[in-house]
Image (cartoon, rainbow, N blue to C red; front, side, top):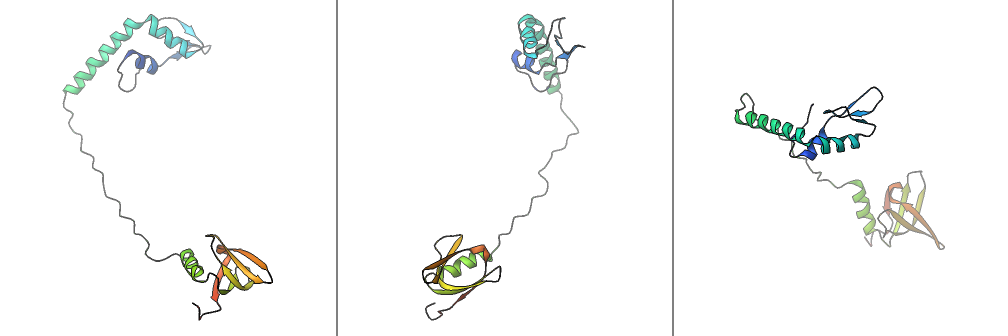
Length: 162
């Protein structure tokens, strides 16, 4: 039987117990000839019928651990953390999106010429309260909503107010 890890009590021992399957696919008790199709049923059987044998196995495992712990382990090197990773350098420059937002903030309620990605040019009064879109009042009550990512160039038309 191969038991993995540290085992504290009988329940953990039974849970980590490796059950073997026979030819038909039924699980077999490692201590007797009991078989069942369900592994949980076999584990319950082992816990109820073979409790004394499990306790003997646990005592053997504990004695082996105590013998191994008593010996000093030599030849093992301390493992350091290795090289430290370099610190990430933060970008000090302002991104293009932040520049666009900054310019549009000052262009709010001013006449602006916008050059769009498809080549169109819009002129009108700019209103940019939304972080993603710009409202351009083209005139005669027509309002065009433009996504900020679609704008290539801003040209303020009334420079004396800025």
